Length: 246
Ligand SMILES: Nc1ncnc2c1ncn2[C@@H]1O[C@H](COP(=O)(O)OP(=O)(O)OP(=O)(O)O)[C@@H](O)[C@H]1O
Ligand SMILES: [Mg+2]
Image 1 (cartoon, protein in one colour):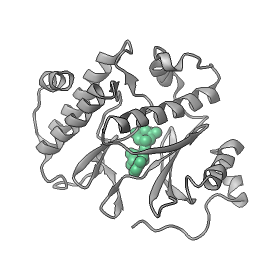
Image 2 (tube, protein in one colour):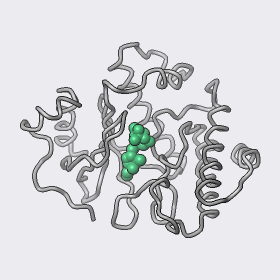
Image 3 (cartoon, protein in one colour):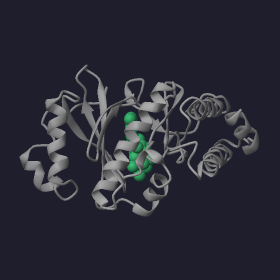
């Protein structure tokens, strides 16, 4: 199991450091999650990307949870707007940067809920507040699950079978949740006990989104390209698309 550090990561002494990345509200929300027992405590940063910080947390049921914190300052707004405009659920998005990030976080929570309800393999979402989301930590045995880009040779027992398992998840997402992930790549698919788990749902859109078809084609194309490059497997994009839609 991943080791939890004994000391709290987020206390007043850390605020000086974290205030470079987080604002006071972010810092305060972590406390609120702890008080509401959505998490027992934040343990430590395990990943820091351009747009988010991923923190491993101890859950209330001796489980592991992930706190995903969207960075306010460095996020790519142009990219986000493309996915939010045209989605009737998010009509009242205000232009202010902070508000847009909050909406983005709410959107990931709501998309994860939909995915969950549709039986799609994705992390269970627990709560969100402002720019922070608490979800299940995907595990692979006793370790935190890794993404497909992080696999060593031979780590996938049967790459062809794994490919079709991913397609099956995309199909469930499409047919049952009426969603398109819209950012499928080897970075956003984790391997958990020989099963794929889709993550990173903020940009996912409803089938009714004007760009929905284009996003789905791009998802399938990214996936087939990756399996061609990494495993020399050839799948027809069109066949896969037809399978997902029908
Ligand atoms: N629920 C989770 N369980 C386990 N690991 C996770 C989980 N969520 C995120 N991660 C890890 O953190 C990484 C980044 O998460 P995610 O893709 O959601 O954020 P992002 O903003 O897209 O980050 P990036 O810009 O680096 O892609 C993932 O590739 C994965 O390794
Ligand atoms: Mg990602």
